[in-house]
Image (cartoon, rainbow, N blue to C red; front, side, top):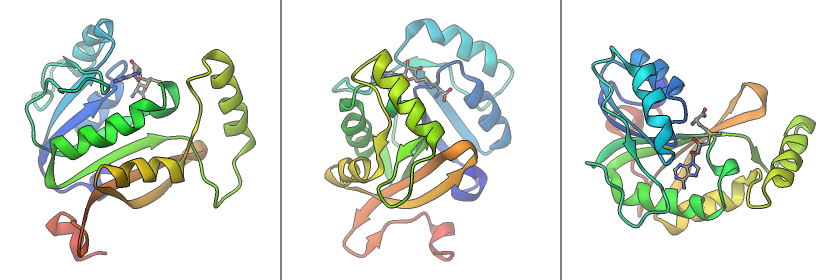
Length: 194
Ligand SMILES: C[S@@+](CC[C@H](N)C(=O)[O-])C[C@H]1O[C@@H](n2cnc3c(N)ncnc32)[C@H](O)[C@@H]1O
């Protein structure tokens, strides 16, 4: 999916890299991209560095809390990727991610998020309803986010939902780009296919 959505090369910022497993897999599959992993949990940096050891296109992991006013990264980036954070973090991280993406993406850059969402247009899988209840019980600030409300936060930051891709196990990949007066500002090699 990333190989289809992304151009051949660029600079990517990963938010909430977790163990670093995603960074290792995706960076290896996207050799034209320079991958910058980040985590708010400082203790995860060692794991990320271990997973990505030997990959010359992965930069040393940095600490990044999306709620921080200033993100300590060297942008701008052609893409920002964030998997499985929005439902396991307070709702405020959604606006922070969108605003941060708007600050740090190039004009034609894309924000890509992945995870389970509640979509008012479609029935929610029972497994996602169970997951939502479990998350909220573990932490009342957590829970699956409504796609419509995520898109609204994106809109407030000057981004818009460009693509919604269904993924295995009732997850979605969402692709956001800047909203311009003419519509979406897509990378040149994607514009022709839209
Ligand atoms: C479920 S893990 C997902 C990790 C990885 N992306 C994955 O999909 O396996 C959620 C991650 O969000 C991170 N996180 C929570 N709050 C955050 C924040 N304010 N800024 C950045 N990351 C945050 C946590 O540290 C954790 O690593």
